[in-house]
View (cartoon, rainbow over the protein chains, first blue to last red):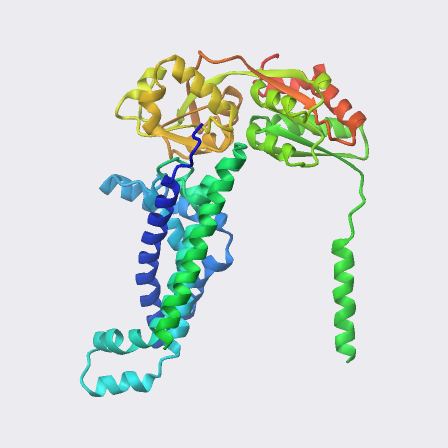
Length: 223
Length: 253
């Protein structure tokens, strides 16, 4: 029995949440911009789909993910046969689960932020000869930045705490997929209350730090 | 105004309806090892028939977490674990009535592979081959079947070699699920679990080199329903129950 607590779960959690947030950032912002700026068939459906993970139980999402990316799943089998990649029981799988669960948080705040941007400003940029990509990168995105950043912070925090879908997809492999929240559960189940207490203190400290730092960062941008 | 009044009345009504405790009958809560998931409900049903007005509620999980729940004060009346170690821990902590403790079934540890597996495994040592990428077993800290597996693999000198391939399940049924879904190449479960998943998994071999697998059952010391719990315990060791257990592949204690 280790007397000190292994810090591996902490680094692993930061890695999983970091990669998940990078992924959801790109996907969420692009989808949010599309839905808020253009009118196309299936727009409402896409909006609902992006919000769904917010209201569905993580275990249901975990089940869907296993059905899709498991070794027997249609995408999982293709990945396995074509590239030899298997996401189940890997930290990449944990990151995918965390990304799916935290996508709505970035998507929702980015969409609200884009809708708060005055279309006149975008049109002005167009009359001055800016391309569509230029309008997005130099007008819409900078103006919506604060709202998107708030969404990123929320998504990162949610990804860090993700438990249900992660446990189903990535399992509980110490050193490989055992994130902080799963390590707490594992220590408690095994009756290692001391380990559980230390892990709970660590995760509380990290969350508090994120909140304080993000609060400061957002305030400075305000002035 | 009247609309608001009606809303308040509806709200109160709903609160009373849902909040009121449902006074049906006597309930008996039995925490039992995950490997008993199929056999125990049958025994519960026949017990309910003989004790009208009693409802037996089962709580299945790995024995380790069940012990933790009881230690944290879960309102459990009877505890059945899949190993002696967990029950010993319960006894040391004063959680069970030691005089009531009885062994009621035995089991066998087996190595299984998915039904459609293309691997040609015949013995434990074949797990070391490069073809075998993932091996599922119960988490040895909390799941009895994992503890037996660790003993057997340590005995065979394979524990260290195979460690990088291990996928830990939170109960024997999770290990069974991993194997039947084909997410892992092989796994260690009880013979009774492998029998439940016939058509999805194949048994490679029975595994030796571990302590005898004998399940104990005991009354939880804090249970306020000792007489009822005792009669359930008696029914678990009765010849009729033994017949049910044997049908599911359990052995005599």
